[in-house]
Length: 193
Image 1: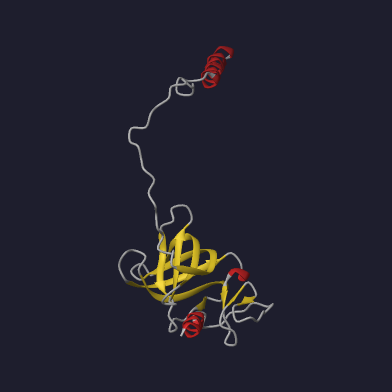
Image 2: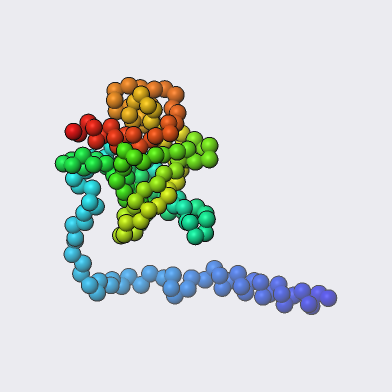
């Protein structure tokens, strides 16, 4: 019986020795490799150069898939409300964290209605004609924030609240939802004209 256990013990020791030896791939040869193609620096524009950032929040965006009758994740990243310097139009743009791919890109209109999503005060739902995929499509979006304080909050008395700060000059300590979040667009449009 002792002879049957010895070969397995020797085999295990050999495996450990092989793992501890450095392989040829791990060794640094000191050779320097020149690049095959020289790349020139290119100026990249985001399309946000003529816009002021009104809001910048980290969030997770979902879109509703009508065919599958389910919510699908669109991306995790930064959602921004941007106001054009000349026209005064406000748009919502969201980009994914690492790739910076556009998840959502649409105008914020006074007719849009934002609602709490199934009673969750950290998420909300709205409909928009989105242009993120390069073609105009009617989409239903849901967005989720890390905390209630990070949400876009409106009340009928004040046009736009974010982290207890209202652009109208009033501060509210207790944050709460209003059914019409996108009244902020109406307020921005009316302040421009």
